[in-house]
Length: 239
Image 1 (spheres, rainbow, N blue to C red):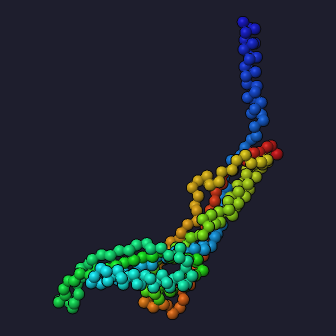
Image 2 (image 1 turned 60 degrees about the vertical axis):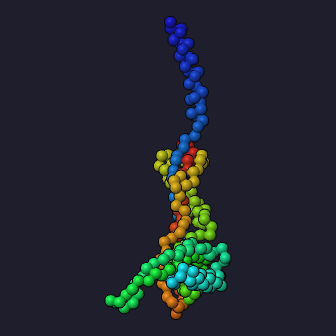
Image 3 (image 1 turned 90 degrees about the horizontal axis):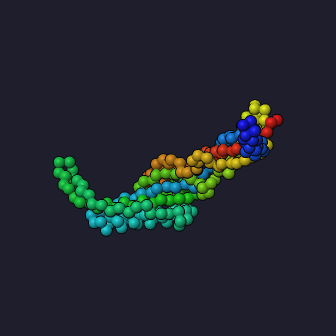
């Protein structure tokens, strides 16, 4: 009986020896999250322009709106907006009943209202001029500008570099506090959570008048924050 117990003990030592050896060769690791951000100036601006005209006939209302839209498109194209930067958003023709005449002697008439809207996309450097020429050409309302980037990943590389530097700084400090030193990188996960990508900013309604403003419209795109996060697993060893 003592012999069998000794044999079983020997077999167990052989089974666990490779596992212990593998654990001995696996490096210790330290997982760290890092974050970084940069400020980037938008280079694209978008506007939404609208025109509304009314007439006794639907065809007359639509024709009037078409003429005004054609004038606006010609004006913004001359201001430097490319053909690809002009897009029709909607065309609507509807019949309405309105009251006309002096109070107490009003009567109802049917009128047709035609509305058309355009989306205008240009460089931020000319968007103020685009607003002015659109107003001069007869735009009834302007919404915007809304800012964005011609390069969807604008600033992301710089923000990621800052996030990696932040992770390494935190890893060095944590390892030193534990009596270890960082020896390498085992893995890197870019954007471990949903990234906040640069996108369009909220726009305000631009003033609209029947003639061009005496003072040119100046637009200030400012800068938008672009953030990045990383999750890094570092290998560490006793200092």
